[in-house]
Every structure is written in structure tokens, then in C-alpha cells.
Image (cartoon, rainbow, N blue to C red; front, side, top):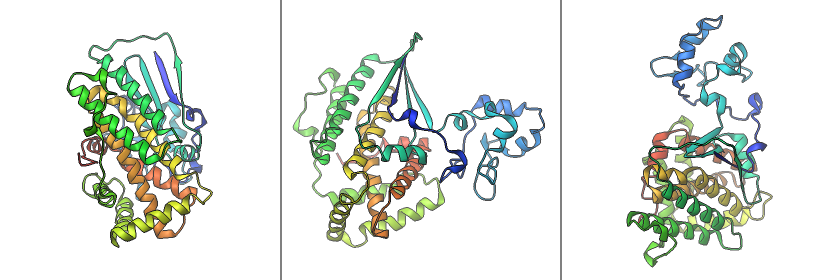
Length: 358
């Protein structure tokens, strides 16, 4: 068995009550079946508190009047953990923000950007992200697993990450190349000739004739296509949309140019590197999942689409305040990630959208 994780994985440590935005607030955590059964059969002194604060019908933890997990104390520590110990935690609470994707003889272990501390690590990383591989003697065989498709997807992902990390090339050109590859891979797969995925046609290229219209349409997805999980998110979107597109194309393009000039003279991590790290994150986490649903193009489009949405949210925030600190960048990233990655419905919907109007 092989285990793969990003080079920053071991830098992460949960800071618990010192976190700027606890993951125990507002997030409706679904309890895994094993933990739910354990809670149901618990007979200790904490039984009454446990029973009163779980929605047994929905299989989730209850929330208090502040919208936080009912087990979160005023000092932002977990009451269940304190009374019942670490082993009492459900899978999500025990592992988050760690996440494992399972493939035949491979486990890919990642850290979710929805955690502020993870977003802080990634957004402050200026070197190209690399991946570490470990191996043990465990072996497994899935009854139904397309290993040929999977191995080709691994090659495709490696090539995409190599391209997006080539800082000698303009970022826009790098992204265009990744989108071109995704079209070619899907086309060859559908035709039964996946082994030739790197043989491109002119029609594989994504042609964006009006960037303003593209950005406006993509931002509208956040209103019309995705479930809004957190009430304050709707306010952020409405306000951002007004700042971004409220004065039309000419002002938008002027604002965009001024924003990028401002950023690149600030002390923030360079904008191209921030966007590069986002593409690497989304691509590394989601592309190989196409081995299960064959939606290669949809996954790559979503990875680039998510990166563009975060860029637009950063631009909108800058237009509102006239400046950005690194804490602002981190907050935009982890809040966007929570809205998308904490909802299976949103993740699935993102991969079905026609991001680039092909």
C-alpha cells in the first residue's frame, strides 16, 4: 500500500481554542454509524447530556442558540472530549481537517482548506508544493477498479501540476494549457484511446472572448447553482457582486488591473503563487476521483472554476476595503472552501457545471 500526502501535511497542528473560527460552529456534522451506535449505548455519567444534544433522527450533533455545536464550551473546548476522552469523538471530529481518499493500493491523505490553520499554511507557502510517498507491506485488490484509467489519471495529474508550477510561463497560459489537456483527456477516453491523451487538437483549446462576461457568469454560479450553508455567506456574495460588477465592464477591468498592481507591490504572497497553490490543491484532491465516475473534464473545470471564484472574492474584498492583509486572504479561502467542500451536493454540482461554455 502506498500513502501520499502534501509536503506541508506534518506542519499542521490543531490550535483548538486558539482558532480564529472554530470548526465546531455552524457546521452540521454528520455522525458516522459506528459512533452513533456507541453514543446510543453509552451508560456513563455523561449519558443525559449526550442524549439531549444529539439529533438522533438526523444523526447529527445539535446546535446551541449561538449556532455552535452543543458540546462546544464557552472556552471553545469540546465538552464531550473532556468528559468521555478522545476515543469518544466521531470520525469527522477526530480526523478533520485530515481527509483520506481511497484507491486500490493507494491512500491519499490531504488537509482541507476549510480549516483556517491549513489555509494559513498553504497561502503562506511560496515554494512549489511537492508530495511525499510512503509504502508499507499491505496489499489489496478491489473487485471493480479500472487500474488503466487510474494510472493514466495519475500521469495526467502529474503533468497538470508540473505545468501549473512552471513559473517561467504566464499563469493564464498555464491555466489554458491545463484546460486544454482536460478536454483532450476526456475526448480520448470517450473514444477509447486514452493512451493518446497528449495528442491535442485545436478544438481542445478553451477560447475566452470576453473575460468580463465569463467572470460575471461564474460568479453568478455562487448564487444560482450552489447550496448556501452559512447565512452570512449570502451577504458576502451580494456585497461582492455589487463591488465587482455593479459599474460594468470598463470599471471592472480597471479595478482588476489596479488590484493586481496593488497586490504585486504589497508584502503578500505573490498573487500568481496564491492562485497556483489553489489549483494544485483542488487538482491534487479531486482529479483522481474520476476513476469512479469518468468525469475528467468536469473535475478539472471545477478545480479551475473554484480558483477563479476565490480570485473574484479577493478582488471584491479589496474593492470594499482598499487593501488586504494575509488574514483576509486566508479567511476568503477557508470560507469558500467550507461552502463548497462541506457539502457533497455542492461538490457534485460543481463538477456538472459548464464553467467555460464549451
